[in-house]
Every structure is written in structure tokens, then in C-alpha cells.
Length: 557
Ligand code: G4P
View 1 (cartoon, helix red, strand yellow):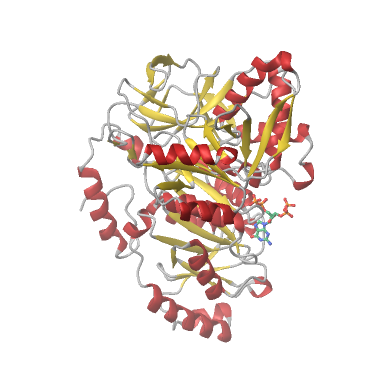
View 2: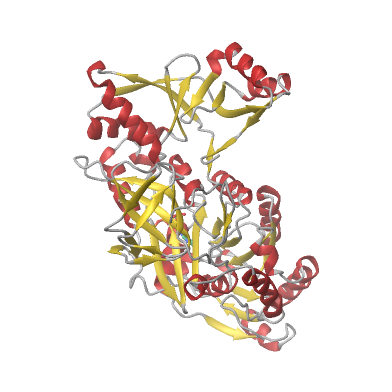
């Protein structure tokens, strides 16, 4: 039987995944097959403090990308530093350096895309999720599902992104494991499939039982652990189990496993790949426990670079011709130089340094003399890149989020959503002599995706929408430093923006005129309703059945 790099060599899984891969492959013209099939591009997501940074570090240690623990600095902005600009700048520096971490593991090239920990930069995280093929979701076993987890999972569900769940901090007294799984399933609206099962938690935590290879991993608390104590059990009635964990826990494990087998059955990897079922691992990132087990499964089941939708057709990763899109833009740290780094995900073909490509939106040929890849924590000039890779491109203001590069064909990658901001403020120019600079600055910052810009309907009041207050501070600071434009913000009483569409143009225009105080246009001229409260929003939705209120907007419609 043909073997593909994604075969999962766990009992019956091998057969199932081969069938899936076969279908998948026959549709493709795979010129760069070898390079594509060894790539896995993913992100780790979590509510702050669940252990994302710790897990990242352990994965990099396994990949040999770093040599010592503590080498990865958390890029989260500490709570106390919300008005410390130097801290914001420092953190922005760290997050450029850690934006993409590529490493080799057992013949795979893994691209780990970092996401900001601070909730005020959540939009940045949502966009990064458009550039990955799968995610690992970290959940703190003590706190369970937290607000940020919910939001991130909504984005994954919208895109049917395959998710692996890592339940962290098993060395702490956490929630009952069955209750926790139930909570995750109910709150995140995803079906789970345990791959390992914990024996107790907190001080009593003895390790995990691997439900597939039927082995026992015994827990030792050590942040330096690089080798786990693995015992093959074979049959749960084996006396070895009692010897290792004691009579009480052995009995409990047998009961649990019987129940789990009854409830969950066998994992169908196709369900994981279509985002319906999330395999679950239990562990303790700080103790490096359960991490390698998850990584080994990840490289076997996680998707290789997937085909992508555009406004014209589906682009297959294995196509000869290059295509890619910009999902993140990072400003230069030096305010004297306004150049930026645009992060591009390669979607098909081969990207080559110094070759001319089409910037579809600007209908312009562009070429890059110094494209970067991000190996471990250093930036290197890259000669070529393949689907799944992320390349850093120097940009002097030509790019905005969602821009597509091709070898000449005209299409835009779709599925890059914008979400409603949560805080709205009016932008007030404090220096009329610098109006032009302010206009240019706010256009460019919003192109970068730092914030969203709306213009009041029928007027020219500029409304800035952000997810968190910290972003307003960043904007004010950067407008002054980089564009010499002084501004201030006036709070507005809105809580949500909804994009409006209707088959009846007249009804939509009437609505916008009547609701002028609450109506605006986004940067692309699409009409938006700004609601003061949920009550107002629901009332308008009920009263205007001919108008559709959208809670997200597509960057490339
Ligand atoms: P984040 O990136 O998701 O925000 O979380 P991060 O990895 O920074 O972890 C948050 C805190 O949780 C850290 O402690 C970290 O050491 C701890 N942690 C991570 N994994 C585990 C685990 O498996 N068990 C336990 N008990 N703790 C864990 P901190 O005190 O905030 O930071 P530090 O002083 O350890 O750096």
C-alpha cells in the first residue's frame, strides 16, 4: 500500500487516512509535492496565562530551534504596562522576532505562527488564524473555557480549522476531567475525542494513559524533563498498571477508559481534518509532560498546506504557479523609517526572491530583493518558499491586509474576516496644519489592521473602532511619532458595528438616512450600522427584515 507522509501509524488509522489522502492527492497537480507534504503550518491559541508561551517553548526545544528553556519571551503585554509606550514598543519588537518560528521535527518542516497574548490585539490573532492550516488550543485545566478561548474558537469554527486541544496544568488541582470535557464541548460547540486520559490531577497527578497505543506515561515534575517514563501496558488488566499507579487509581482508570471507549469510539481523522472533532491531550507544559506525545500525533494527523478559496476559483496548494496573501503588517520600530514588514502566506507554487509578481489590487508588478523567513528567532533572507511558508516582505506602504500576489492571474483570497470593534471613538485633529499627515497616517495604520476606520454617513466625522483601549494609545503615539500628527479621541456611545446588505437598495438608503446618527461607511465604502446597545440592534434587526445585519465583514468581497 502506498505510504504518504500523513499516514497515522496507529492501528486502524493507517487505512482510514490513506483513503482520505488518496482522494485528496488525485485532485492535485503536485509539482512541489515533496516540499508541500512535509510542511505543517499552525498556531497555538489560548486565553492569556493558559500556557501558550510555555508550550511554544517546549515545542521549539523538541524541534532543536532553541537550546535552553526560557529562551522564548512571552509577547504578552503585562497588565500593568497599558500606558507605557516604551513597553508597547519593546513588545512590538519581540512580537516581530517571534512572529513565525520554523523548525524541523522528524522530517517535517513546522511553521508555528505566533499570536499576541493580549486581548486588545485579538484582531491580529484572528487574522493570523487565516494563514494557518490547523491550531493547537491550550486550555487551563483549573480555569476551563475562558472568554478569549470562546472567541478564538468561533473564528476556527467559521473556517472549519482542524483543532487539537491540549489541557494544560494537570499538575494543579483542576476541574473533574469529564466535567471539563463537557464544558469545552458545550461552550466551544465542538466534539472532543480524548487521545490520552489523565490519572488524577494536582498533587495526585500520576500521568496519562494513551488510549491508542495503550501505554502509560508516568508523571515526574521537572521543568527540564526531556524524557518521559513510558510503560507499555497492552491490556488494562495487566498487573503492571497496579504496580505503577496503585490499586485505587488502576481501578479508576479502567472504569474511565471503559466509559470513554463507549462514548467516543475510534477517532476518524477525516472528522478532525474537517474541523468537526478535536483530539484532546492532557499534560503539563511547564513540566514538559504530554507535549512530545501531542507533537508526535500532530505531525501525523495535522493537515499539510490546504487548498484555498478565492473570489474566482479554488487554488490548489500543488499548482505550479505561485500565489499568496498578506495577513499581517508590522510597522518598523524606527519611527524615522516608515517601512513595514508585510507577512505573506504562500498558498500555491513556489515563491522566488527577485522575481516579478502581480499585486492584484494595485494591478502592478512587484518584486522583492530581500524577502525574509523566520528560522527560530533569527531572520534570514530566503531564496524561495513553498505553500504553508510565511515570508516577510519589506513594504513602503503598498500593502494592506488581504492583498493577493500572483504570477499574473487576477483573484483575491477570500475568508479573511473583519470583526466588529468593541470600542468606538471619534478621531479629533488637534493640529489643523497637519490634516494631510493625519489623513495619511490613519489610512496607513488602518491598512495595517491596527484599527478600523469608519466615516459617519453624510458627514466626515472619522470614527475609529478598536478591540481594546491599548490600541488607541498605540495609534495616538504612532500618529505623532511617525506622521507628526497630534490627535485626541472622543468616546462614542457605540458597542458594535454591523455591516449592512439588502436586495432593496432604496430600503437600505432610507434606513441609512433615517439612522444617520448611527450610520457610517467603512474604508471600502460599505454601509455600517453602529449600535448603542444590544437592545437597539435587535430592535433594528426586527424592524428591518429587508436588510441583513452582518457581524463580520470579508476583507476581499
Ligand atoms: P500564556 O503564554 O498563555 O499567557 O501563558 P504562559 O506560558 O506565560 O504561562 C502562564 C503561567 O502558567 C506561567 O507562570 C507558567 O509558568 C505557568 N504554567 C504553564 N504551564 C504550566 C503547567 O503545566 N503547570 C503549572 N502549574 N503552571 C504552568 P508565571 O508564574 O506567570 O510565569 P513564570 O514566572 O513561570 O514565567
